[in-house]
Image: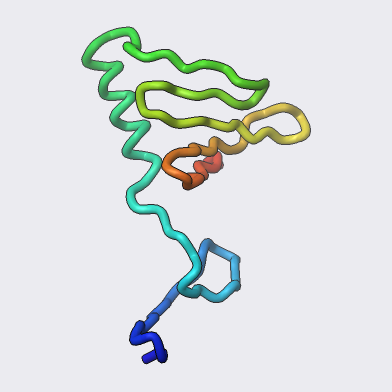
Length: 99
């Protein structure tokens, strides 16, 4: 028990291959990016064409007004998208390309 009366118990890693220790200052996101994309795909399947619009901000950045989020596409040296980052509610959710 710490002097402040708080107790911190941590186990695991931030991500595979990352040996940094977990502490009380690390922010973890609640939920997952897959829920957002699944709901968008289901809405598209039910209603036909999308009922929302994604607006470009830069070459690899765009935003959506419906879910109040920004998206960034990370590309490799050949310009191929390798990762999508969802920026929402002050957190970044990384969706790396599956090989």
